[in-house]
Image 1 (tube, rainbow, N blue to C red):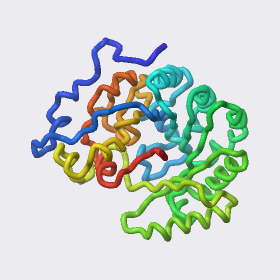
Image 2: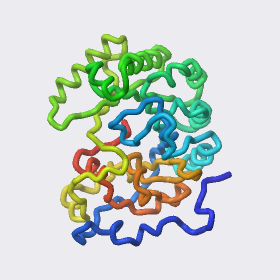
Image 3: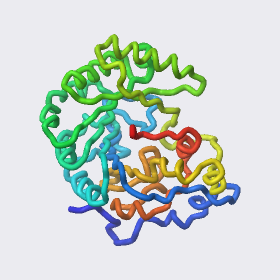
Length: 315
């Protein structure tokens, strides 16, 4: 079964002609990105997670099904389509990918073609399956892992993720590094933080846990819970040309990246990793279809990309 279009044959793009999609509330033409290519493809493995973090941008928690769990037969045709379109890497997020039964099978298949990265909380689901990852070391391409450590103080991290999560996440990171996998760290970024001091605190912490001090650390701003109404400036066409150049617009994720989700039992391509709580960003049932659609800067998380250059990628 190949990538899915609408079962009726009617393209799900009625939002493309609505005033809200095309204009700001003031009537100005919205800023947009016209996708140029598919360099990176993300798979959202579902919003089920072993943790229930109040700040989660996906609203993930045990048993959650806002986005359905993805299986191997869901993912395989899109790996194939992405390869045909020239994709350079695959990335996987959730929820927690390691609660997904087929995640290792999916990775095993994708690694035949391109490198992969998996975002994980590094706790029990990973720790229980870490030895199953060993065969992936023999594949043609590499798989890397990014583990979330929200704060360099264990008690602060555990406030959101649960007691003991901090130590388990570092156990997961250490187990992956010991097996020769490339590991990076994701953290929260406060607007008024001393970036250099926070970075040093993390690197001292990594060293104390026997993890390479020089690994990549990716800092993210607050993205808010799904469906949040956040008061941010509206991005107009003028904004996109006044404050951005052709070169900087090309770095927006929606220019080179898409995310696949399983929603209501169907696989759908969304504009990026940050907008799956707004169905206006459902760009179709195939990757080719999604690449032909102009992405309007309507979601409040678009402002993070506009103002800070936020990106879930590491390249």
